[in-house]
Length: 171
Image (tube, rainbow, N blue to C red; front, side, top):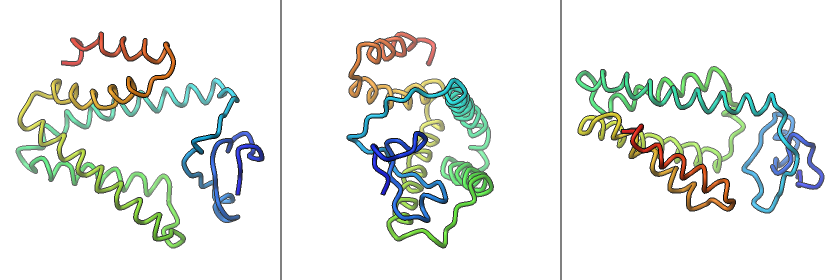
């Protein structure tokens, strides 16, 4: 088992059990008590910002395309299509070793899939009833409220206030 004190710099704060997990580069969730003090390299920060921006563009673009498909497939059909395409893309990129997965891992994957399907289906059902801008704004409020509740530093609270101040731009 890798602990925060013995972990290499790139695995600090994570746990991987067994030799096969560590050789495949599998990481589990960060330990709640682990404190990582190493700063990320500028390249890693740039990659993170790029992934965040790509995710945001993908969400908006996907929602705009989905609205056009509703008359043909309905909200739940569009949800199935979008999640199916995402699954195929992830399978091609990640190529997970299904054979080695435990029952616990399969349970987590299935529950995550059900949660994603429910979340996307509900969001797309809302797009059939209210304008896209309003639906995306309401969807964004959940993570924003969570960020506000979990903020521990003044700077975190300041960024939440900036996001709330941009409210007129969302809708």
